[in-house]
Structure formats: structure tokens, C-alpha cells
Length: 505
Image (cartoon, rainbow, N blue to C red):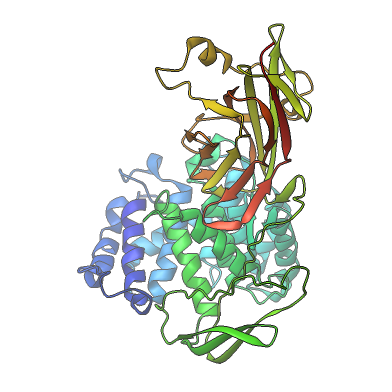
């Protein structure tokens, strides 16, 4: 039922979003599909009024699925669809009883119960079925709600003048879990596996919060709504889908809510860009489906050390989205740049059977093995993060996956942290390829080692590889860099170093 109902809601969205879609995107039966699925709702409703995923019995009725159904019903009613009367009334009776009685499945923790009750409050906030007292009764339980629950409780608390203080307190709690960097805003929390029973995911949390932001005129929101949009759309990346139906549904709802609030005026504008007083490009936008335009100005002789401003001038109507980026090469690179990613590199040399951290400049003999450890820490989820570690000229990687690599070299690659290593700073390192949602692909090239990921949870990640000194001389070790492929404003830069490779005595 959860999947069928999500399809019904998405078919309804398709009809309302045609102005945003290209002509090649079609859904032939969308006009009739939504209503035909709604007409099946009774087949998934238990006698007690709750909704079940498969079999409509009281013991299978699920409080979260029922609350999700109520949310969907409210949206679909506003779009003109008919909800079966008996299903709606039975569902309302079941949910209001869950709201006002201390009963829940045994596997529901207190935070899960409060979260589901917040969703019920949001579902019925405009129906006259709940009162200010219902909102205030759950205010003491707000802090134990997940972010998903807080977002819905905030929307419900906006409905009554007497509960505005509760709404503000909830908004403050939501922002306490926020992280801002690189033009994006995201919210993070931790929960145990029990929350999987109410289909929790981090991206669903953020999408629910975006809907909450679009539901208020609170000045505290500012430009954070759009920064959250950036995080959500980049969280999907270049895939043609979200992770599951819940993310798909709540993220689509959120983006629609955002568009209704911030993109209500059809674009009809001309934009010019200038540096100082000298124009360097212009663009026009007439339709919501117009593609982005890039305007560039190359760095020129005399720019070094100069101060200037990039000015964008808009003539016409509509909401303009823009980003400015400066690409440059510093004469004296700084050490340890953290622009949303903390990354560090360590070189270790094996002496007397033990790994020893090497201080700069690193002095080794040609033929020696060097262990390279990379430590990545991120405060919030990152999308398509790539780590690129350039090799000093006298070293080359040892690819332990190749048959030509010696067994001795392969065995050396097993981790044996050296004393004083950054490894001891934390005790929750995620190792390479530990799961699909970690760094899971690497390329060991002649000039660099690169590690790739699709999506990373907030936390600490450890990467490593082996290298061997193949030529004598003095070589620079450029900084290691971590960067989001589709949002290079989010990056981290490690320290540079140097190598002195001597001929073997």
C-alpha cells in the first residue's frame, strides 16, 4: 500500500508539474491512475481503521503507514481527488485514538511514537480535527522526536496563535542539528535500527524540513531553504531516482512546496554580468525549463593582487539562481584547508618490522616501501566525494590487485598503525569498501591515487595505499585533496611535503 499510494501521489504531481517537464517526459495513464489507486484503499484498511502494507488485519495495521496515508489523502484532496468516505473516516478514528491514547506496537520506542504523532498532527492541522491543546500536549515530547517528527510538529504548531512559541522552540531545535558549508545546508542526527520500522532515512528528514521551511515566513529561514534544495538535488546526483519511495515522495513534495512559495512568477528576464564596470556576458530566460548558462571571464595580466567585484544585473521578472566561482593557483598554498572536508595525510616507513611515522622532509632509500594513510572527516553527508592524492615524482603506487605485484608488497598493505598516528584521534573510522555508502572504488595511477564515493554519511573515513621509491632525488609532495565532483565549493586540502630519495647504500 505504501508503494501504491506513492505512485498515486506521484501521478498527481505529474499533472501539476507539466510546465516544468520537457515534452519527452510523458505518463500516459496519469489522469486516471491516481483515482483508481485511491479506490483500492479499502483493501488495505484493517477493521480498526489502520492501514496495512499487505494484509488488512488489525494485527498488521501500522501507525506510521496510517499517518503517511493521512498526509497523502490531504494533498490529494486539495488536487481534486475523491477519498473513499468510509476509508477516510475509519483512518481518522484510528489515528486520533493513537494520538490521544498511550498505545503503540511493542517495537515502537518513545521517540518513534512521538514522531508518528507529530506526523498525525501535521496531517490534520488544517482539517479542524485537532486543537491547540493537542499541539501543546506533545510539546514536552518534541525533543525526543526525530528531525522528521520535529519538521511535522513545527508545521502543526504554526496553525494556532497559542502554539507559536512551541513552533519557534521546535525550529531552534531543528537548526541545532544543521550544518552549513559550501553554499549548502543540511541536517543530521543519529538513531538506532528501530527507526527503520518507520522508514527513516537522512534525506527524507531533510526533505520534510524543506517542506516545513516553505510552510512559514519565519525570518530565521533566510536563504537556507534554497541551500537545502541544493543539498537535496545533489544528494540524488546523476541518478534517475531517489533511494526509496519515501525519499522520492517527501523530496518531491518538498521541491513542489518550495516552487510554489519561491517560484510563483514565470521567468522573463535578461541578466548581464560584469567585472568592475566591464561586461563579460549576458543571458536571457523565458521559461522554467530553460537550461543554465555559464558566463566566464578568464584571469588576465594585472589581475593578481587586484580587488574587484562581479556584478549581476537582472531586468525582468522571475527568481534568478546563480553561483559564482573563482579558479586560481596560489603562489604559496596554505596547509590544511577545510571547506566542508577535513583531510590529512601520513607517510609511514617500516623500520625493524614496525611502521614509523615519517616527518617532513621524508628521507628514504630507493626501493623502500612507503605506506600512505589518508584520513577524511566530514560533518554532514557528502555526495560524490573524490579523494585525489598526487604522488611525489620519485614514487609509484603498488597495486596489490595486480598479479605482477609481489606478495611481500601486498602483505605490507595490511594496516598496522604507527605510534602517534592521526588514527588514534578517533575510534570510529570507516574503512575502504566497508559498504556501498563509503569509498568503494579506487584508481592507483602512476602519478596519483584516487578514491571515489557516491554518498557518505557524516563521520570519519580511513583510506590507504602502498608506494615504492623508484628514483633518487628530491621531490615535492603536493597536497592531498578531497572534493565533491558536482560541487567543487565543498573540498578539503591537506599539507604539502617533500621527499629525499637516496640511492640504496
